[in-house]
Length: 469
Picture 1 (tube, rainbow, N blue to C red):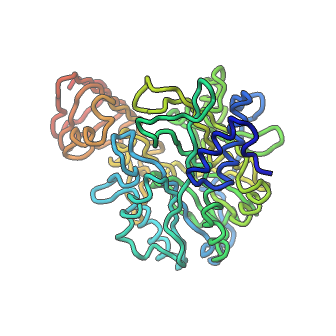
Picture 2 (cartoon, rainbow, N blue to C red; picture 1 turned 60 degrees about the vertical axis):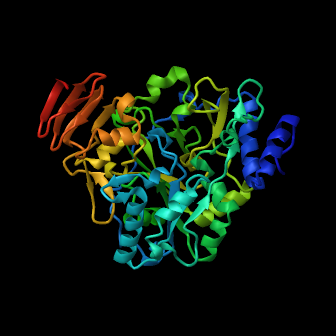
Picture 3 (cartoon, rainbow, N blue to C red; picture 1 turned 45 degrees about the vertical axis):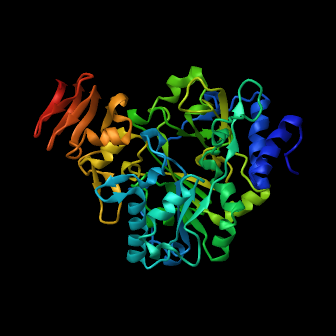
């Protein structure tokens, strides 16, 4: 039975979503999370309800007896989550069209990864992007140079949904006449499952003979379809598989894998952690693994699960508190109700997790990350992956002064000759307006203190320890 229109307040949200032509399953999914929020559910997952996860199969040592049946690879699709804008870096375009290496954007490298894999394996392997309304055109334009990407008449992309932001003061849909688009927000990447269904893409994949999907973020260039992992999933008879990696100090605030009291695996995001348990949440020795957001799915199992639950998956509700205009802290306070794709691990009957090496996780969330992946701390492989240098076990920790480095154009101006060498850098902190010359080398833990007046690290400088620029 539909969850919509059960109360006058619910009805106001339903009317707004109906007017926006959102499908019934998306509306019902939103109403589930709205009802939880209005009922006072905190959306938290306390430590008394979970246990740490210890031993997992290891991708580097598991081995795959007999290798992978090529027919399985030929029934697998690559899906990239591609709904993010580069607003955090001062852009209004899709983040995936930012240049990662000279002449190559995220989407250029994703396309090369898929085409290279097809060439090596002889499999068809489609690429699908889950776009938002604001990234669809940018992404379509970026992939025009790759006409061979389309497979079996499948689209290269499909749209995720959007949901209303909620006023904190009265629980109603926010109205913001200054910029009506800001009344809406994405429902998190957990919307993947509903969007695959409502766009009929899931049906088309199943009708065309596809059975598996490998899903990852478009900004994670270390996440390429790995046949040995697919073989492990098939051999284990799993219907859901999450790639996890060892948490380092840099990952302590991110989501981690845990186990529920009924034995099922679960994902706990930072927004689900009770405030008083923040220290325990960040204990990387207790909760050893973080979710890389590289997910493997059985498409028939997903279709069955969606049918069982009325077209959407009842995942944990994540409550994000923001302002209606994220650029204006004085604008009205709102709540955004979201879900995380990985939290579906607790819903599938045969879900597993596998430990993977750090090289399968190199996302770019801000210009700090961008400096890392542009530098020699990472390597660009022949098949389009950006992975940690063989000399490193973890990425350098980078903290650039946001006053001067947060926006992409300002960031680029301060590295006119390209990034410094970071292959032997453990951490880099820059305070003040500092530009970098050509051939600069950063080794060990380095802190550079400039001032509000522009300064410059000279060409060829080798920096260790603390410096004034």
